[in-house]
Length: 613
Image (cartoon, rainbow, N blue to C red; front, side, top):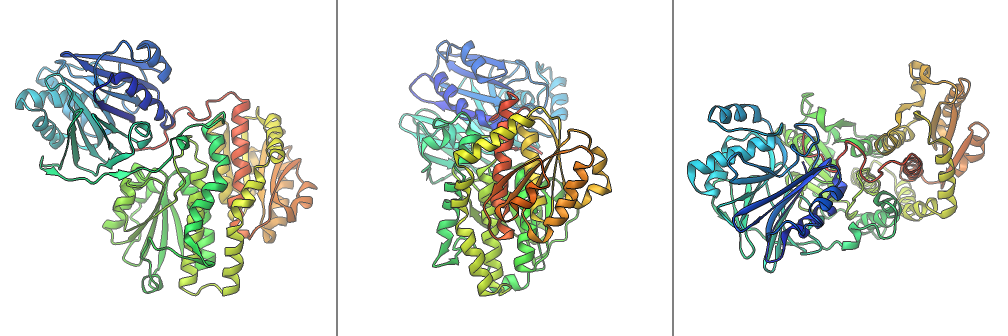
């Protein structure tokens, strides 16, 4: 993995490939490469490090002739980052070139088989094995399409494979299984890519390939095939994102832009689903008869999406009185989960392609549970396989560290909780009206947090604390769940050791880590638990901690009497506070990372869409 672009047209391919890869840089990568084809020859350049290294080595693509080519940004899975391990890979006989996202699980067995047949290898990657396997099958069959079908029969694992063959000028053949791949239609050109952002400058008509589908294209023709090689019909979808949505628009980083986009994104998420002061979910089919039989809800996700589920547990259980269990998708498949027809499994994923989450969805369905996906990307694998889907409509999120996707996912969870509570009559009309009124005010309140005056306060705290090496986040109830996300943000982009604990758990071990100068970030917005959290803060201060408090206006003065410094957010209903309290934590992580000189949009070792297990 991580980013793929393939192009066949009637203009030089290399500059187009470089442009497409630039649009995919947000996905995270450690090396890059492109290969073009011209007059019977491949032209291949690969470089470890940033895309700028590849652009410099190819003179922005000018020294790589040809009107067809493939490109890749790699995030290492098999073999360390290096020029040799970078994609594209060329077969031992020089006939085939391949880029690949995913994991070839049986690559060692295939490599052993090919080695016995005299095939040689240059890299440590599973992708070179797939490339050489395809070349060997091509020698056996003499037909590229047949060779690909034969190779896929032998491959176990996940893949988005994009292939060029020296004997078939201008043709690019691609296959997909459990890793995203799209085809973009153009006049006198065709595209394949792992994300629509790579093609938006050139076309808005795309096809999202399904698993076990193949696309064969050149500059003028495209053919879609099923796994048996039979032609199939695919209907183009129009992408209505503005190109500017995938550009910085004057901000220093995509992450900062996306933090500031949260009020608009939140409003776009909720507005179409609230009519005449009622939650209306036309896009799902959870009727009263089904919900009355509901015995349990799992919220299954990874990373920040999982922490949305941790907030969701408090919200859904309070409003709906249904047991909720957040579970990491990577663990769900293996814990023998208690699922049946009366279990609802909420699947949350920004990309809709997260490998562990997709596998968990399939396991839930296998066990008879109903699945409801909360995703951002239309046409993604998770959106297609779930029984129901609610799109966040957050627009493209480019920064690796999520902000607006988290906020809009949380908005959907709140909407869903209110919808179920209303349907089951587990909430009074007065409670429903009060919470929904507060909910509709959240975009405006998020904007209030993002005023220049407030952001300057966060900048000051970032300058004060950016050199710390250990940070502990504490809170209770929904504040504890928010702390999990705040801690993750600091780890992701500032590379600071950070942990989040339920404040009441400090005395059961974590307080032994507090020493003179340790930074503790405490979120305390819940009135019923505020005094208890203040007691926990005092325990840390007694051991020398510096405390940054996040609270609402109601509790601002009382918190200031206890902490070293604080940030104040607007008041709202207690279960909705996470939508506001997470924003200063996002800003704090951003500005701490900025002070430390980190690569904020492309943090080390991380990828935006994790399509391997």
